[in-house]
Amino acid sequence: MFDTKSGKWTAAIATALCIGLSAATAVFVGAHAATSLEAGDDALIAKSLATMLRAGRTVISRNQDKINDSKLGDKGLDGKTVVAEAVKIYRETSGIDPASIEPNSLHGKLLRLEMDAIVEVLDGHQQTINRQGVGFKGFIPAVFGRQVSEAFGRRAVGLAEMKVTAPPKLVRNPKARADDWEGAVINDKLMLATWPKDQSFSELAKSKGKDAYRTAMPEYYGATCLSCHGSPAGEIDITGYPKEGAKVGDLGGVISITLYR
Ligand code: HEC
Image 1 (cartoon, rainbow, N blue to C red):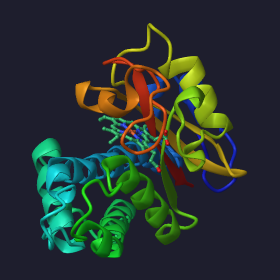
Image 2 (cartoon, helix red, strand yellow):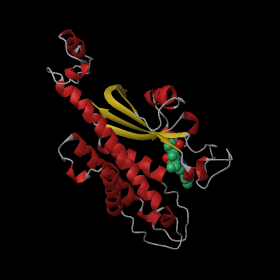
Image 3 (tube, rainbow, N blue to C red):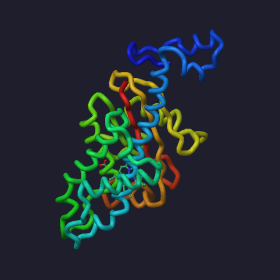
Image 4 (cartoon, rainbow, N blue to C red):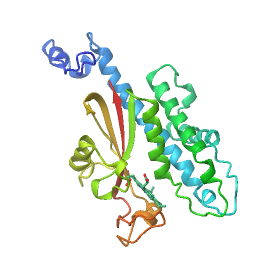
């Protein structure tokens, strides 16, 4: 078990085994119970933050044609509207209403910071989104996702970080480059042919020298991604980047969530 105060792995499980309990039962005994339950909370929080990010990207994706419409002025996609739509999708996918998550809990706090980040990004792009006479404006789910992650990171300093990264040869924006931990998890786990589809990987690891509960969630290319990330490799897509030659089902990216302890 991991002790948040000393930052060291403790022998609680070994002790439990010595006194004849299973490791699973050890969760409920002794002074380390809180720590173990926290790890469960962390897993839930990481999943929740990723669900909200995905919900937000879905809102942008569903409205992409509207955003790209050169004739339409006000698109009606301000921060408040988009976050409300994202909350609806979050509720549909998870069965949980974000508003019901206790605001003073770490989970409630981080989820609200993420929702604030979504509002910040949308409100900051109103001029671009509502510009007439321009079709494609570069405001796509990937850009939204990166900027929400960055805005979230600024709000959650010392508590959490979020990033959408990708296998090294696919990274377009240098800001999305994997760090050592993410790179190793992508290479040694998520890229394996035997890795179960959609299975995320979590562990206690360092991030920027600090102890953290880290999660990497794989994302795969679908057909709609290939107009930009597909074939022929090297051809310039609508955003100005060379296509990667990817295929449906390839590992396209990883949502990386860091929860500091
Ligand atoms: C309209 C073209 C376009 C489409 C469609 C598209 N992407 Fe991208 N993608 C981009 C651009 C441009 C970036 C870089 C954005 C930035 O500046 O951060 C990017 C970045 C990414 C990243 C972050 C890592 C990086 O390379 O910077 C991932 C992961 C990703 N895309 C996956 C996908 C997936 C999965 C889909 C389909 C669900 C998809 N993309 C659809 C253009 C596209």
